[in-house]
Structure formats: C-alpha cells, structure tokens
Amino acid sequence: MSAYIHPQALCESSAVGEGTRIWAFAHILPGARLGRDCNICDGVFVENDVIVGDRVTVKCGVQLWDGVRLEDDVFVGPNATFSNDRFPRSRQRPESFAQTWVRRGASIGANATLLPGITIGAGAMIGAGAVVLRSVPANAIVVGNPARIVGYTQTTSVELDSASAAPATTPVPGQVRGVELRRLTRAVDMRGSLAAGEVGRELPFVPQRCFMVYDVPSAEVRGEHAHRQCAQFLVCVHGQVSALVDDGRERAQYRLDRPDIGLYIAPMIWGTQFRYSADAVLLVLASHPYDAADYIRDYAEFQALLGEAG
Image 1 (cartoon, helix red, strand yellow):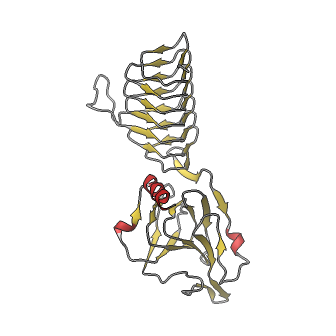
Image 2 (cartoon, one colour):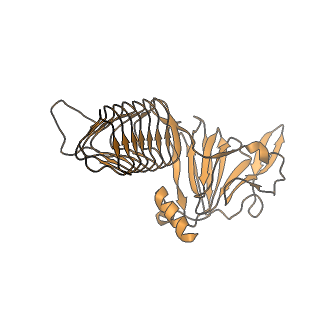
Image 3 (cartoon, rainbow, N blue to C red):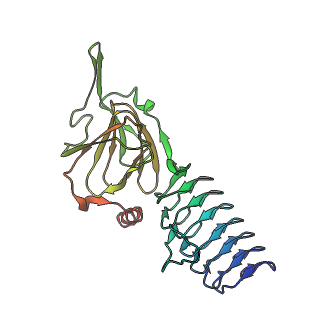
C-alpha cells in the first residue's frame, strides 16, 4: 500500500514508507525520511535532517527540526516541542545541530518541551507539559518542570508490608527473578532499636565491599546499571528510597523506608534507585570488590547479553 498524502499537505520528500498517512497542512521537507505506517497529523512540520521510524504517530502542531530522530513505535503528543540549538541566534546557523533521539516505543505527552541533544530511552513516558532538560532512562516516567522521574512503566509495586510477618530467616520473593526482600533481625527496647543480619541467614553472601549513598537531590537517579557477577544487598538505614529492579522481562519497584528490611539483587539484574528523601541514607553491601569491568551501564547492552544467555 502506498503512502497517503492529503491534497492540502505539502510533501517534498520521496522517502516516505508504505502505509504512512500525511494529513492536511503538514509540510515535509525534501531531506526528511519517514518510515512505514506512520500517522503525521494536521499542521506538522518536518525539516530535512529528520528520521522517523515505522508506526510513529506525530499529533497536530508538532515541529520536527533538523537532528530529531524518532525510532519505531514512538508517539508524539499535540504541540510537543523539540529544539535543536541550545544557544539560538537569528541568522546564525551552527555547523551542525544537536541530535535528539526518542528510542523505540517511547511517548511524548502534549505540550512537553525537550532540550536538544538528549535521548529519551526506549519505552519511556514523558508527561504532558514536562520540560525535559536531560536524557531520560529507558521505561522511566517523568513529569514536571524540570522533569523528574516519578516511576517506571509496566512495573509492579511491591510493598514492604508483605515482609512484616515473615520469619527473619525466610526471604520474601519479589516479582523479578533473582530479587528478594529479606527481613533483618530487629530488637526494640527502652534503649532504642537494633537491626542485625548474619551471613547465611539474612545476608545471602559474605560482603566484600560496602558503601553508603546519601545527600542525593530528589531529582537525581542513582544506579542505572547491572553487574555481571556482583550481587548487592540494599538497606535504607534512614529516610526512604525507591528501588527499581529489572530482569529484562519483568520490572518491580520497592520503596525502601525501614532499616530492618534489605533488598537482595542478584547479578544480571538492572538496578536503579530514585526518589531519595532529603534525609535518605542507603547502605549497599556487595559480594565482590569494585571492578569497573563488572558494570553494564547501557540498557540495550544488558538486554542483548540476556538474549545471548537465554
């Protein structure tokens, strides 16, 4: 099926995929490349150095400027704004424009604004009216001005209450392979409170390293990596932190806000921590010494390695 171009649209590009629909008053410049089965709605402008993948929807009032790259299955809501020059001046054209990437399956809400040169990760969701100043991780949900992460798409929330009645030696399974909530031994009396863990009971490995994360601004995200061999045990000893775990198929989110609950994360699990309270202190115990080569920091690489192993 050939592309459909509305009589009141101006399409100067010959690189338009089969089944794509370009509606009234849209203007597509000659250098633009549009994939198959796209829906380009009324009043959309697409500049020359723009690449649009397959099955992309671009709603009314959107301008795609030089340097914008939309991968397959992206949704761009009405009047979303892209930019490609951080320091624009009239009649001063840069040698090259910053590239803005919206990865496969991501959605941009109505009236959202994206600064140039950032990447919106696969499956991410940008809320309506958000002002996105920097790159957004895969599957993250961001809202506000400036945009901040408030959650992750297709994620199961696991409440710590499910661990409250479990014996100290019984791990409470989460929704993700290789991830467990573990209840530490807790003692409370008039002198105060104590939480303790023993190797072989609450602690599933002998720690080779420990570190604490604190004074994290609430808008910041930590982690965003997996380990090839290292396992971790997370305890929020003060305040609260949201922890995301992802095994490549399932994702779960935990709110860690009790010093007597630990989150065990096996190797080859993608981990992210976000929404730190101002007083949060996160203690991390690691099964291996620090090794930069053990880190997987690119989510696409993480998925590819899981595919090779599976």
